Image (cartoon, rainbow, N blue to C red; front, side, top):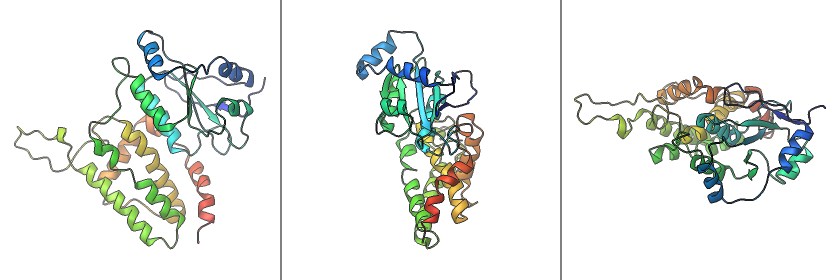
Amino acid sequence: QAPTQVHHSYFFQDFFVISFSTQSQLICGISSGLTGISLAEEMALRQNSDKEPIIELFIKAGHDGENVGNCPFCQSLFMVLWLKGVKFTVTTVDMKKKPEELKDLAPGTNPPFLLYNGVLKTDFIKIEEFLETTLAPPRYPHLSPLNKESFDVGADIFAKFSAFIKNSPNNSIQEQALLREFKRLDIYLNTPLPEEIDHNSRDNITVSKRKYLDGNRLTLADCNLLPKLHVIKVAAKKYCNFDIPAQLTGVHRYLQNAHEREEFSQTCPANIEIEKAYLGVANRRT
């Protein structure tokens, strides 16, 4: 039987379960689940069972209907699951064809959404919180950052980018606003965190050497920010000839370290997906 327009993704870690989804298989998977249970009940199931949860992540497909599409929120959840080290399947959803079985599964919902032991989760923020709470130590690592500002520092950068690209080429005001957010991020990345400072040492650390927002491990803060920075870097260069200034050494160090991690580099959409996603925006510019 030929596959439908719902395709599995293709990633290559031991804890990914790879399988083609035919229409019959997918419908079977849907009809066998979706029994509504509360979060407390799900946590009790997790605590009382040594079995791995059955996790299916649905993300936006690219223009070819199969590969990973442009969606920072999809990539964020992809990264979270990879970092958790749990087994899961990834299905790319071709929204242009809107498969009927996915309309039945999550009516009116665009990716990302998730099935956890057959229970549908559709709200991005709630999914992230649920995974952090449910996939918890000692079996799975915590991903929450130690410092609240690691979450806050990049909160406005994507909105500033959106205003910048929509108003190009008459966007000098928006460009300055975007640069201010990049400088704020750079200052944070170059400022030592409290845990980097040894008060018993005579050596003063003036510039942070950490790899990521909250230290030398990727956290939920990175999973949220890095996909957005990747989109900004690609789309702003393509349509506005904008580069992140070289003097922002903290930002460049951060991106370089991130690209050395498979959890980020192997979940990024191809540049062409981002460029196609913003082509309409570029064509509407004044």
